[in-house]
Image (cartoon, rainbow, N blue to C red; front, side, top):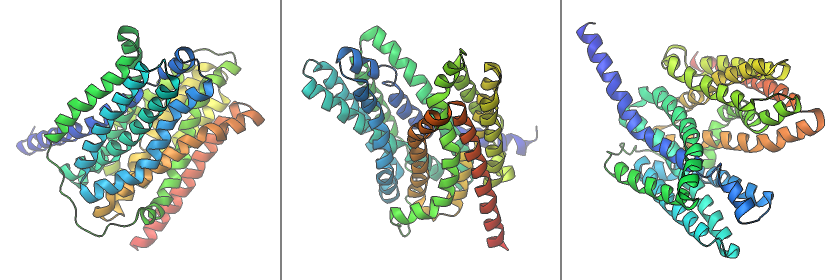
Length: 399
């Protein structure tokens, strides 16, 4: 290896380590979000004796809070710095864990315990929003705009990996120390990583005109609609793949979700420089075609093995959609508003995943579970067509 190559390699390693030292905050945030997912529904149903509707509300209210808090997170990070937003997020994690712990201790008084539990979930949702996108822009601000693709790549792995680790960890904690340990663990993680974040150098605060969030939202909308076309398929897969397998008498539906995660992470790790080589929209277009193929394979699969293969292809297809759109979004956004722009883009993902359940449920009730994946494949193809239009508009603007 030449001296120049060794220097470049060493610099690349340092950049990745710097990115991971900040994107790691997102991993912790999503791990805290995952802790209660597998244990709170059973607690509400069996320990509190409440209905499945209340159990669903307890879980879903966090995601609505994240959705509503996206504009706040973007505004705080743009005006006061991404580090300050992340610090607020970790303080929120501590508060959420405290409320959850208190709610469980007071379970004998449901009139008090349940509102505290819901309050803890709301605060957790807001905290996730305050950490997720600002952590990305913090890392970009520290490492430079050319590192955007790397940041977004590691961020996706941190988000999915954190949730994947958090859910089983929650079960282990409940079985070993009781369900109250879920809240206490959240407090502890929030406190430890608050101290770590305090010691990190902030990204420079970019001067410039701060646009109102609704103006940023309108500017991001074309890319957001492409993200919706991709994300509805992901939401439909996670919500209905188990019911689809059951309806066909198949087993091992979880392997389809595992295949999705494996395809997603493998694609991210094996093609880390793809956005630099082929540009955002080109990569997104290819990914949407692969995602469409995966969804259509699940729809037509005559055996669970082929359906699982479709899940793997879907994961590969989804892998670079958000990073590619994020790179294109930040290219067209003034630096003073990049937190708001990424928060607005994430808003489309939240809405799409949240709406996928009821929308695809209507499809299933009228046409059957298989048609969910046909519709998702067609939506991915619709996103592909939108990307082609955006590519054409970009080419015309450059000429």
